[in-house]
Structures are given as C-alpha cells and as structure tokens.
Length: 458
Picture 1: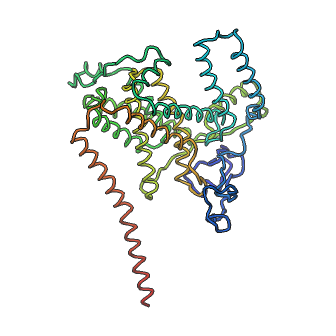
Picture 2: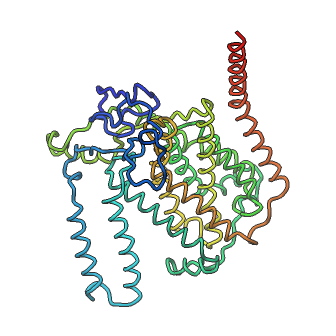
C-alpha cells in the first residue's frame, strides 16, 4: 500500500482498507464508485436459477483480484502447462517403476498422498483468488484446497459409525484406537502457589498463542473479550460431558481469561495496530539495488500487502448484529469441536492431528473473516459471500453433524441448570436485539403511518 495514493473506495467507506476489495493499491479500483443500482433481472425479467445466459453485471463471478501484483515478477508468470507436464512425469515415474517403492501397501499409501498432492496442485493453479495476495495468491488457493479436502473427509466420516471411524484412524496412525482417560483440572482447587504452579503447563502457552491468533483474525478487543468469557461459560456448561472442562474457578478466570487469553489478545492487537499504521511501499526486484535490498524485498513478500482494521459495527443495524452473533457462534463451535472429536476418536490433546486441525483452522479463518467483513461492510461491491467463508461455515457445520451422530449414548444429558442458563442467555440476546433494532423500526413505521394519514386528511 503506497501511502500517497488515495483510493475512492476507501473514501466512500472508511472501514475498508485502501486496497479492498482488490488488495492492490497500485491499480485502479476494481468496481466503479458511480455504479447505479442493478436492475432486478435482465431488462426487468427475473433471473431464474436454470438460466444459462446470465449476462447481468451483478450476477457475474468477479474474483477479488483481477490484476496481479508484479513487484516480484518471476512468481507471477503463468506456469500451468509446465506444472502439468512436471506433475505427470513425476506421477508416471513413481507409479510405474520399482525404483522408489515396491508394489504393495506402501505404494497404496503413496497413491493416496499422490491423489492429495494432485488435487492441491489443481487448487493452486485453477481456484479463484481470495482476499489475500501475500506471500502469493497460490498459497491461499492451496489453503482453500486443504479446507476442501478436510470437508470431504468429514463428509465421508459422517456416513461411518464411530467404531469404523476409530479403525480408519489407525491406518493414519497405528498408535490410535486405544481408549484414553480424561484428565480433570479440578482436583486441587485451593488457591495456593503449589496448586497454581501445578496448573501451569504447556497448554498455558497454547492458550496464549491461540488468542494471539484470534486477535489477528478478529482484530477487535471487545470481540475477543466476549469470545473469551463465552468459552469459559461453555466449559462450565459442558464439564459434565468432558472431564477436561472441569477446572478450578481461578483456573477459569485468572489463568485463562486474565492471564493467558488477555496476554495473547494484547500481543495480537498490538501487532494489528502496528500493521495498520505501517507504511507499505512495494518495489519490484529489478527496482531494488544491492543484494541486501533484494533479499529484504523477497522476505517482505511474506508480510501483508496491507492491513484492514475491522470495525464490526455491532450496534449499527440488525444485519451487523446478526453477523457478529453468527461469527461468535461459529468461533465457539470451532473451539469446542476438537475437544469432542479427540475424545470420540481417542486422541491425546497434543496429537499431531489435533494440532494440525487447530493450525489449519487459523489459516482458513484469516481469509474467511476478511471476506465476511467485506461482505457485511460493503454489500454493494461484495455481491456474493466469499469462497473461504462459505467453505469454513460448511466445515464447522459438518463437524457438528459428525459429533452429533457419534455422540448418541456417549455423553450425559444436559442438567436443568445448564438448560436454564442458556435459555436465559438466549432470551437476553433476543431482548437486546428487539430493544436495539425492533423498537426504533416500530416507532419509525408508526411515524410514517401517522404522516401518511395526516397527508391524506389534508
């Protein structure tokens, strides 16, 4: 982002970054600001879902970025045919010769890996660009491909019973398939230095890193605080089903919320604030002189092209409020799902599969939340929900379906106190939305009706 360039899109909506939605401030805006409201259908005729010749401008699928960043020219040259040729040669050599692996079970495993690699190669070359272009749009296409692979695996597991799923996990890791004892953190709740010291483990660092990532995704202090408190309340509500949710009160509110979560959120927001004000000046490799400058330019390719400050506007209108509540619910589900999945599939909390799932959800959520913010903040320009947010919503929902199916008869039912607590919380949420948005609209409607009646009477 060049600080001297003014973007008319940014002047129209100050909540968006100077490069939204194209993420390229060195080019003209992707959408003209003076575009009139679209006509509902070509020549006024409604568009049906089976129409093939959909030529209206507002029904075209427009990627976030149509013009590539050429500051590092070599990495943006098309290599689709070269990649196809190299990939086919490698596949043919590994599959048809005995030099790499003998025919048998090992080669079947390599065949599965080759199928995954082929799919990710297709994703890298052919998928649409998302909102991010650093370090390269192809990297985020691969991330989207990994999300799709995980979603397809969840859909497959949805049609399996729990015992079959546990047997399948043994193919991926022979050490799995063994029942595990759930660890409780509420055995010694005396507020003593020894008890606090025993509670400090590697998971405290994991908490801090996790909330650092959430701050980078959400970019809002209040959102992170609400999510942090909501997760602790969810742990209280579910500790009758999962023993590792049972913690001491000081573990919930002092170690987790006030120490680990706050520290991670604070550091993450400080990084966000630095990236918001950092001047971005991008030069090509050819425009930089000296080996040190060229190396610094290549390393800067892995930093953001620009950074957008999120202002969710929760109390501005019902659409923003609903989207924020939906995003909060999805984040809570994404946080709780791995606890149930690892319990059902008998995996330790530090198993590589669990860690990989958390890391990939972080990478999937970065562009997804950016697309959601663009969608709710500037709906005239972001006329469709982005592919990253759509797929991540499908992934979290499919995880919930898998957990719901496998959990039959596995966990204790909810106590009445938990049901009443969540019912009161939902009632307060609905009441707030009605008072904040329903009553003003009702008053406005009543005033309009009185004005119309007076006009007719006069």
